[in-house]
Length: 159
Image 1 (cartoon, rainbow, N blue to C red):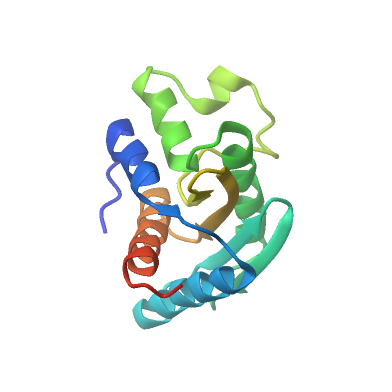
Image 2 (tube, rainbow, N blue to C red):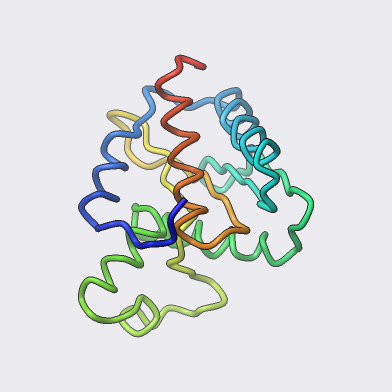
């Protein structure tokens, strides 16, 4: 996986394509389990988290992670909750304008991180209802792992 930033248009297209018809507790378990399976196969030191609103539905930390990954997850999730888009897209939009998320928003860095890895859980006809997040790799790799799992999950009829 590349650590090169993806364009804002490509990131937005991912969000528009990766929409759930519904999202249940069982979906969170299956999606989280798929992410953990991918991480195990590749021996990736990541933490995986899925929230619906403020409720954590899934969390797993692989060997090589630390409590810091949990703090990163929380900060990335806060970006998705506030802006309604992936944490990578929010950060990329600021970079596209020649600035940074931190400079532009002046939001507290201990609460928000516009670094890749948190992706909105969007339900058709409803909107963003939660987040699926990976922390532990370079930001674009975190993001790409989530997108890969969402594509497999939504395309494989695992629901």
